[in-house]
Amino acid sequence: QVHLVESGGGSVQAGGSLRLSCTVRGYVYSNSYWGWFRQAPGKEREGVACIDSDAPTTYADSVKGRFTISKDNAKNTLYLQMNSLKPEDTAMYYCAAEDRVRGYVLNSRNYNYWGQGTQVTVSS
Image: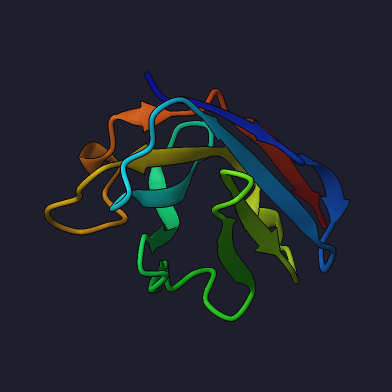
C-alpha cells in the first residue's frame, strides 16, 4: 500500500517562495507518475505539475516558469519548488502517484494514491 505525506506548506506574501515535499512509503512501481494538484475552496481540483519515471515534466500553464517539480528516488521524495507566488496560488496542495497514467497526466481522475494535503496561502 502506498502512503504519501506532504509537508512544507505555509503562509507567504506575494512574490515569495515555498518548497513542498511529499514523502512516499510503501510499494512504488518503477514506472510511476508523480503529480502535484491543488484545490481552492469552491473550485475543482486542478493539476499543477507532473513528473514520470523518465523525468519528463508537465506543468499547468498557470505555473509554468514559476514552479518546478522534481524527485529524489533515493529518498522516495517528491518536491515542488514554488517561486513568484501569487494570491491565486492559494489552495490545498496534494501530491499523488500512479503506476501508469493513460490520458492527460494532470487529470486528477487518473491517480489513485493521494496524500492528505498541505495548505498554501499567499497574501497580497
